[in-house]
Length: 288
Image (cartoon, rainbow, N blue to C red):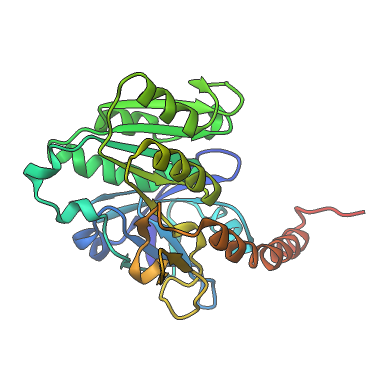
């Protein structure tokens, strides 16, 4: 069993949890993910690592309630436990293997939206720890959906915030800010975009026009996390890749996002039906 040491309700559907998992923190790197499970027969949920404390053996996850399994996870409290925590899984971010002197010559831009803020933080933190500051664009529909801002500002050179409704930061979407920064004279050697698939698609269309190489994380389309189910199959250039074993990060300018979104949509109907059944059974859903 893996004890939960902290629970924080970030917004209506987003939750943060600290979990005791020392063997994960010993070897995890930015870009990797883990799998959590509640109960022996529970669903395997792949989640990108948000933060980790090697000394305390604590790993931090952020998740969004989208179905029955994540709804059950949201009911867990400090002192409760996950039945299984498996990881680290997937390939770490490419920059962790680069020569540090060459890496310090690059100007990085991170673009994150929704729960995609979570996996961006450990990457920005790792770069900061190695003397490399990066700029970060954090995007959300409204102010209450922005989280980890203080932590991000402590690690990044600059943090720019956009909200769809203008309740915080600049009114607009992430790509509006990217265009503004470049128009104002900023030069970026590399962009990393993590968030909803549709956000990553339009970020990549923008950065391609601007000539900025871009990496994306295809974690949102993962289901099983082992490569056996085939659900996270993604076309990158002319190759078939699996997000969970070959990624989750890929060259965003080569990813077939339309195909990825179609694949992601295949699971929404079943997921929605299970969520409704769960809410009805728990007395939280009332139908006429």
